[in-house]
Amino acid sequence: MLKYLLGAILFLGFTYCRAQTDLTLVPGSSGEDVVDACIQKLSAISLFSNDYGFLKRIALVESKFGSNSTVINANPTGGIWQITTKISQAISNSTILQAILKQTEIVLGSDIIDFVDGDFRIPLKSALAARLYIEYVQLTEFAQIIDIPGTVVEQANWWSQYYTSNGQSNYFKTTVTNYENANRCTVSKMDLYFLLDGSGSIGPSDFQQSLDFVNQLASEFNISSEQVRTGLTIYSSSNYPISQFDQHQNNSAFSDAVTNTNYPGGGTNTGEGIEFVRTTMFNTSTGMRPLADGAPRILLVLTDGQSGDNVTGPSAAIKADGVTVFGVGVGSGFVENEIREIASDPDSDYAFGLSQFDQLVNILKDRVSVQACKIPALIPDDTEVPITIDSGDAHYSEVQMPTNGSIELSYTVTTIATATVYVSSSTTNPSSAVFDFFFELQFGVTVVTINSGETATSAVELVSNTYASSSSSISSRKKRAADNTMTSYPVYVTVKAAAGDQSLEATVKATGSNTRSKGGTASGIHKLSWMTALILALLVWILSVDI
Ligand SMILES: *[C@@H]1O[C@H](CO)[C@@H](O)[C@H](O)[C@H]1NC(C)=O
Ligand SMILES: *[C@@H]1O[C@H](CO)[C@@H](O)[C@H](O)[C@H]1NC(C)=O
Ligand SMILES: *[C@@H]1O[C@H](CO)[C@@H](O)[C@H](O)[C@H]1NC(C)=O
Ligand SMILES: *[C@@H]1O[C@H](CO)[C@@H](O)[C@H](O)[C@H]1NC(C)=O
Ligand SMILES: *[C@@H]1O[C@H](CO)[C@@H](O)[C@H](O)[C@H]1NC(C)=O
Ligand SMILES: *[C@@H]1O[C@H](CO)[C@@H](O)[C@H](O)[C@H]1NC(C)=O
Ligand SMILES: *[C@@H]1O[C@H](CO)[C@@H](O)[C@H](O)[C@H]1NC(C)=O
Image (cartoon, helix red, strand yellow):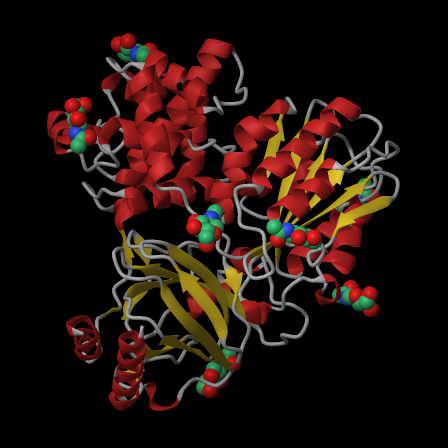
C-alpha cells in the first residue's frame, strides 16, 4: 500500500535535463552505456567492419567497463580498454594505421586521434586505440586485414596472445560467458523476415546450414502473434514463399516449416526476391503488423553469390518502407558492395561477409540477436502505440520531427514503475551516455514538446535548424511510409525502465505539427492533471487489493 501511495506522491515531482551530454568524450567516464556508445560511434565511421562484439568484451575483461578501480588506479591513462605503451606505440609506428587514424579525424576530432600523449582516459580515444590495435595485429601477424576473431573462444585466445600482458584465455571466456548469460537482451516484439538464397551454387549441405541458422536464431525469440512474428522465403530464379508472418505463430510450428523446406537450385535473382517480400510479406494482408502495434520491421537477406538482377531499386524501396535490413554474404562468391547496398546503415552493424557457412550459427546468430534488440520501432503520428518493458530493459523508438515545427510526446504509464527517457537526434540508441535531453516517467501521464526550426526558443529546443539541415545522412537511413508527407527527420527515443520495479506498461503517442507550438512555453513540458494520476493510482490500488 505504501508503495502505491508513494507512486502517487512521487508523481508530483519531475526531473528534466536539457543539457546535451556525451560521456564518450568525458575523461574517466565508465559503464556499459559509455562502452556501447563508443562502439556505436566507431561503427558510424564505416572504416571498420563489424567487430563481432570483441571491443565490448575487451572492455569488460580489462576493466569491467572502466568501473574496476583496482585496474584503473594501477594504469589510469589506459582508460576503459587499458591501452598500454605497447599498444599505442604499435599504432604510432604503423604508417597504414596512421593513415586510417588520420581519416577518422574529420569525424572524431583532433583530440581523439592524438595518441602521442599516451593518455587514453577519454573513453572514445581508448576505444579507437583498441580497435586500431586489432587491425594492427591482423596486418602484422596475418599480413592482411582478415576477418577478426568471431567466436568467444577465438577472441579469448587472441586476447591472451596479443592484447593483455598477463591474462589467461580462460579468464576471458568465463568472464564474458557469465556476463552475457546474465545480461541477455530480449526482443519482446518484432516482425522478422528471412530471405534465403536457394540458388544452385550453394549446394544442399550449405543450404541446410542456412536453414539451421534460421532455426537457431528464431529459437532465441518467443514466436507468437503478440510477440515475435517471423517468416521465410527462398529465392533463386523464382521465389518460394515458405511462411508468412501470420502463418506459423509459435516456435515449433515455425521450426517445422523451416526444417521441411526444399532446396530449389537455379539462379540468383536477389533484387526480385527483395521486391517480392517487400510487396507480399511486408504487407498487413499477410500478417505484418501495422505501425500502431509498435513492432520493429526487420529483414535478413542471405546470399552466396552475385545477384543476377539489379538490387539497387528494391533495396532502397524496402528501406524507405521502414524495414531495417541485414545483408549477409557467405562463401567466396558474393560481392561486398552489393551486400552493403542491400543492408541498412551503418554497414558495420548490418552488412556481414562470412567465409564459411558454419559461421552463420557460430558468429552471426549472436550479432543479429544483439543488434535486433536495438532496432527502433517507428512511432506513427497521432496513434497510441503500446510499449512493454521488463524492469532494467530498454525500449527504442523513432519519431519523425518536422524540420520547422514541434512534436508532442505523450506517455501514459499504467503500472507502478519508473523509467528514464533519453532523446537524441544524432544517435539511434540514446542512453545515459549520449543524449540531447532526458526526462523521467512515472505512473501517470507525461507530455513533452520538442521544438525545432530557426525560430524555436522554448526550453525543450531539441535541435537547431543547422542540425536539421545536416541530418540528411541520418534521414536517408529510414523514412516513414508513404502516408507521411511531412518534411521531417528522425529523432530517437530510448525508454529505460528502472531495475527492480515491476515491468513498465505504457502507451506513447506522437503528435507532429508543422507550425511550432505557440509562445515558446516556459518549460515546454507539463504533466497532465495530477488528479487524473491520483484516480489512476487508486484504481491500481483497488485492483491490487482484490488480488
Ligand atoms: C578488478 O581487477 C582485479 C585485477 O585484475 C581483479 O583481481 C578483481 O577481481 C577485479 N574486480 C572486479 C570487481 O571485477
Ligand atoms: C615503435 O617505435 C619506437 C621508437 O621508434 C620503438 O622504441 C618501439 O619498440 C616501437 N614499438 C613497436 C611496438 O613497434
Ligand atoms: C518468452 O516468454 C517467457 C514467458 O512469458 C519469458 O519468461 C521469457 O523470458 C521470454 N523469452 C524471450 C526470449 O523473450
Ligand atoms: C503451433 O501452431 C500450430 C499452427 O500453426 C498449431 O497447430 C499448434 O497447435 C501450435 N502449437 C502450440 C504448442 O501452440
Ligand atoms: C499488399 O497486398 C495487397 C493484396 O495482395 C496488394 O493489393 C497490395 O498492393 C500490397 N501492398 C503493397 C504495398 O505492395
Ligand atoms: C541498377 O539500377 C540503378 C537504378 O535503379 C541504376 O542507377 C544502376 O545503374 C543499375 N545498375 C546496373 C548494374 O544496371
Ligand atoms: C518556420 O516557422 C516559423 C513560425 O511558424 C515561420 O515564421 C518561418 O517562416 C518558418 N521557416 C521556414 C523555413 O519554413
